[in-house]
Amino acid sequence: MLRCHLSRLMGENKMKVMDVARETGLHRNTVTLLYKETATRVELEAIEKLCRLFRCEVGDLFEVVDEPAD
Image (cartoon, rainbow, N blue to C red; front, side, top):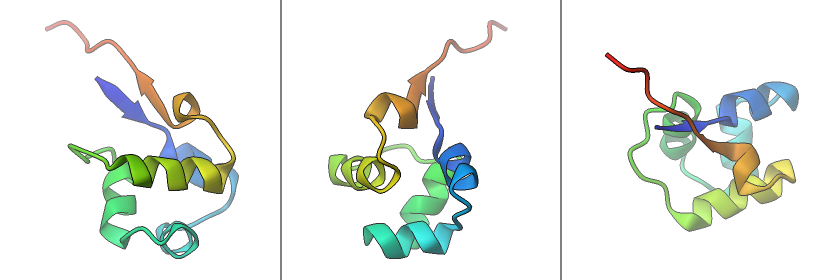
C-alpha cells in the first residue's frame, strides 16, 4: 500500500487545498484526492510540483507501508 503524506506536509506549512492548487498549478481535485489518499494514479509532473513546493524528496511525500493481514 502506498501512503501519501500530503496532508501532513500541508498541515506543517499551514496550507489549504486551494493554496497548494494555486501554488503548483495542479487541479484542485488532484490535490484533494492526494490529500484524502484516495487517488489511484498520479502524474509524475504532479509529484514533481508538490516536491518543489514543499522542498522535499519523493520519499517524504510517499511511503510504502505493509497492508494489515486479515
